[in-house]
Structure formats: C-alpha cells, structure tokens
Length: 311
Image (cartoon, rainbow, N blue to C red; front, side, top):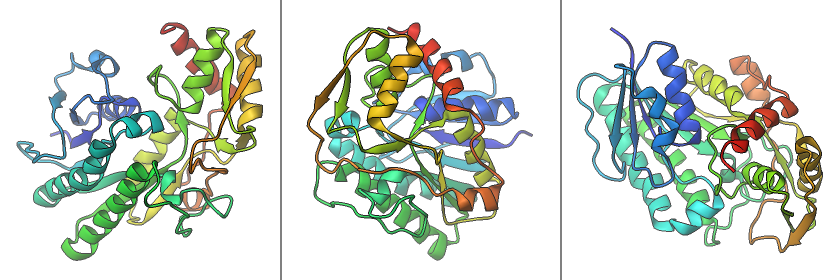
C-alpha cells in the first residue's frame, strides 16, 4: 500500500506543489483546503489521479480523515500581508485552532506531524542572517502580529505535543519563496513586481528600498521540505535562499529581466515591515545536505512565463 499523506492548505501556492511532488513519489495524497486564499486552479490537473482526494474544509474545525495516515503536513494559513490583514481572525484561528486540530489528527493516527512555520517568527530581526537559535524581535500587538504570533503559537503547540504526547514532529521556517502558482493579488514582492513590470506600470517600492529580502524558488523549497520530513530532527529548521537583495536593486533587476518600460514609485514603509530578511541555512546544509540549486534568473524566468499567461 502507498504511504498516505494529509496536506492542509494543499490548494495554495506551496501546498499545491507539495501535492504534486508526493503524488509523483507514489503517495496517496489527501488535500485539505477551505479555499480562502487557495484555488482549485492550482490542483485541477491532479483530480484525474485516483491517489488524490480533495476536501473543502476549514481546519479550525474538527477534521476527520478515514483510514490510516502516515504524515500530516500543515500548510494552511493566509501567508501574505494583504491576506492576513484582510482575514486577521481566520489567520489567528488557523494558527491556533488549526494547529490543535491537525496535530490532534497526527496524534490519533500515530502519524508524523510537519508544521509550516515562517521567517516572520523572527519579526524585524536585530541579527542578520537569522539562525534558528534567534528568538526574534516581534511586536505582539502590531498589525502583522496576527500572522507572526499565530505561527509562534503554532510552533509552541507543536513542541508541546512533542514533549508531552510524544508526537513525532518537524518544523520548517520558510523564508521568501516564489514561483508559478503565486496569486496575482498576493501582495508579496515577486508577484507585485512581476505583474507591474509586465504591464509596464511603476514598480511600488516601500520606504527607500534599502530593506532586504532573499528569494528561494519553490522547487528548492519543496525538496528541502521532503528532506526535513524524512529526517530525525524535531526542532525548527530554516529553509530559504541566503542570497540577500535590497528591494530597490531587486526592482531594477525585474525591470531589466522582463524588458519592461516600468519606472519605480515610492510609498511609505508599512508598520513593522522587516528591514532585513536572510536565512542562516547552516543547519539545513549540515542536517539535510540541502541548499538552493535554482539560480535567481532561472526561477524568475519561469515565474515570468507563468504570469505572462495570467496578466
């Protein structure tokens, strides 16, 4: 019998790539998503597979999966500022109640539990790059806190179940990831810049553009997730690309790469927007033998091709 895996948030950007990946490895995939930010367009090509099941469900409510389950991967959450500022309560509920329900499912099934956490647990960091040992600099009552604190709580609950109930757990802290199937209105840097460039509209840079981000292509991230899932390490692990870009330089690069006629426009920096974001991936290299393989221009060209069809 095939191994059986539950992927919550499976109709989202990263989740849909995971569904595809595990189907290719001959897993039975049970995809759960309430489609608040996910889309059936991301997984429609998988519906013909008898190993694929989709369930429209909000994991903040009790979740029942019939039969055996080997792995539970929890990737359900709004993940961009536009989304979690529009859905603040749902974001908090999926981080708290959704984690409780899904790790409870893993406990009941004797399954390994995998939590998708985020670099946002580091807040606006005072150290750069950010290692897993850094506790973060987070505003617990700011507008971004609904996401930041939901994920920090989710990590705490995951480790609580690991220590008290002996649930086998893995935690990944995901840094900026990009690629096909991102939403046009996602609000994050890559889709914003790419769509504006393709439309020859001014690229919107917040602040003076000196803040930094790092960009990991989705196939690299998925490979790292798989390696972490199959490892024996229960603590958080950073996955991302340590190549650091100033936002202003990245905007100019997108304009050049796309051949756009766009200019750059500046707007005020949002409250609590991180000034630096760069992963220390020493642990991932040592523990998983993992590091990004896809060069930025290669990944951006694939992303540009995807968005060309969507504009």
